[in-house]
Length: 264
Image 1 (cartoon, rainbow, N blue to C red):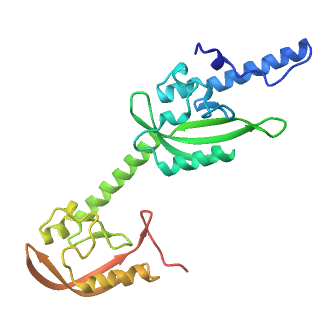
Image 2 (cartoon, one colour):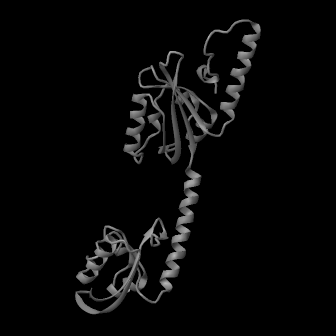
């Protein structure tokens, strides 16, 4: 942290006597210590300089990104963006900067070593006594560990659900509201002579299944009922051979992983 501009946020105006100078000095020292001690990455950018360069970053921002202050100061924050940074999010940030308004969002950035990390970004404008925009303050909280924990929990829950459904003797499928397979159990896949992965993303009619089943699913998703039970004559094609039979179809709507209940 040897950069002069990054050692302290300079005083905001003239002070009076010795007591005032002492109080102001203590306030600046306390502010600098607080910014240095926080676990959130903080940057301050000059809103009036070309390309809104960073003029201050705290140690947490250095640790979060892997860059040292000398590599950060003078650059626009976009240098952290990479191939998978969402362009829509970037456009929203750019619009907020142009309009001089606050924005909170989540963005995927990249460290110096090329590894990605997710952060919650809060960007706020700073104005002087005349309401003129002077700076932007950006606060970033690293969400990578939290997102990994959520992903692992979801994966574990999905694995548990898959295990349970594989134990069901009948055929089971997950179908989205646009009538595409999200997944199937082994019994349904075996019926068609395919691996379960072959169904994912496919339209429910991709194997030439009975139109009665397609019509039933269209009506089910279009209706208000959250569950339905119906016996249908379903034709199945396996290796070019068509076979048919009566199946008891039990359908249940889910929303964000939970079975949707009837509204009272």
